[in-house]
Length: 200
Image (cartoon, rainbow, N blue to C red; front, side):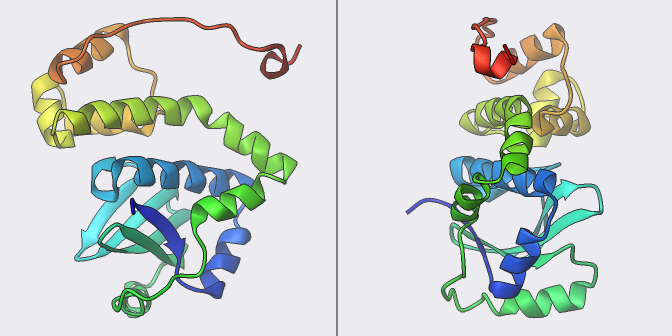
């Protein structure tokens, strides 16, 4: 079994359900990244390791922070919009026995896809997370941390983090340095946009 992102209990599930469509859509995209690449490989700005099994998933600044506990390849959301670390640690300890979590985020995503506003928000993140997934995949296949990749590219960890956010539009030179640093070849291509996506 691969990586999973789940909720701790009904309270956390309800808190996720109450998030705006955009934050839920970003959570689903980050959950896909985690399930594809692994929690520790995703890195900032999407996830940040705090201490021990405790991590954060960052949806948007300080207003969209999820505290998660990791055990093996299970990532369990233990707090939504957590502010008090002591309470977060107490709730994370509920997961320490490796018990059954309530719901998988990918299953919640399937349910949320029935909401038109959520579908629209999720689609809006497609290009951002496609770029993030490619960059994270290149780095992890090369067996590099963000810091090591930054050194090979002759840049800073902050620039690599921005690349992996998918929100920053890199120059052709940056993409060429990324390819060289990861032992890859940069290919540029175009594909037609179907009429429905183009709004035609």
